[in-house]
Length: 89
Image 1 (cartoon, rainbow, N blue to C red):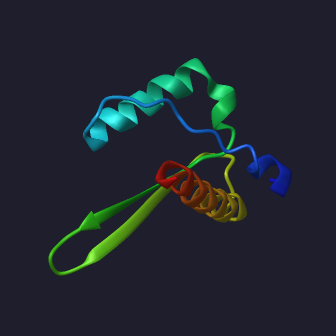
Image 2 (cartoon, rainbow, N blue to C red; image 1 turned 90 degrees about the horizontal axis):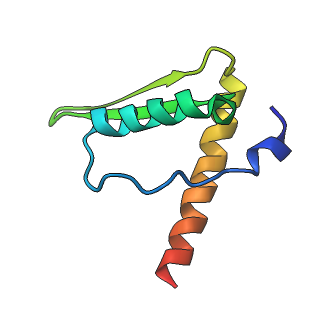
């Protein structure tokens, strides 16, 4: 995946406020079914937070390589930071 492809990070629509993980993932599944071309490469990262440890897990798409996952995470982090700065202004 080229860096140019990673620059087109798009915010997903605002959905149900305070949705559970199952509800949010279901919304994503509906969007992926409706617009599969938007999910050529994807990675889902989640954390299990226990009092004694924090455990991260991830799942990625069938055509998403480790390099793609890292690029998606980096682009997503930059996008989240930039977006949060605009909201703060």
